[in-house]
Length: 317
Image (cartoon, rainbow, N blue to C red; front, top):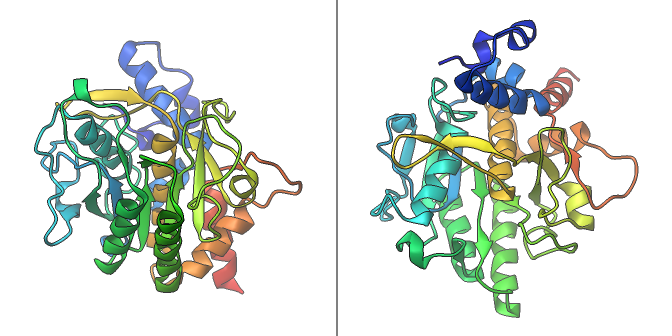
């Protein structure tokens, strides 16, 4: 199987059509859309860059996962009990975007980083499930556990099961405050309800909210938008993305849950290139790379190379 590193831009447009090539070309184009390919050629990530995956459980022994870098929080079970559950499928898919082997069909952005699995979705048969979700209090507790277990980044590809009460909003705010105080960057899916507004997560100044876009960088209609998302968030690929299935076969999916790990992975790679950088420096580089000149509810498209360039500039001054 071809990987992004094996094809120059000229070669990507000259190979004859085939089903496998179409899938691989789509993956390459997705990486090019957000300028991830050059950064992925520089590094696959460092083990000390720990990503807390707040999602479903993961098939930790999946043959296409960089298994040595996927671990559980002590006292928590991160591995799937039912590979057929939607929670397991969701968690394994997102894990593949981040830490699949570079030889797999998944984007495999940062397999050299450590993935810390913290499930919040219960495993029930697919026929009985809708969208995997959690309560605000469960989500807040998971964020804090990842931070306390050593995560430097937290990826939230999670939907809330209910509109947060005042208590739930407070719990989420305190968890994100804890992340800011500890220098842990939080990347969160904006949601797929097609609404305009904000939540306790997307309006928090420390969280990077992510909407989904198509292969041309246009926002998907189901992505939630809002003023705080437009100011501080990012857009990333979230249409027909291929990643790991639970049965060793690649599968497609989409939405903001799929888009969020592209941002998380890009930040993890930049941090791997500057491992002694503080979270505030990384956040400033993200902001500088995506500064928008006019107010909008639609955030800027992720530009991984621009984040890396901004960090280089900071370090050279």
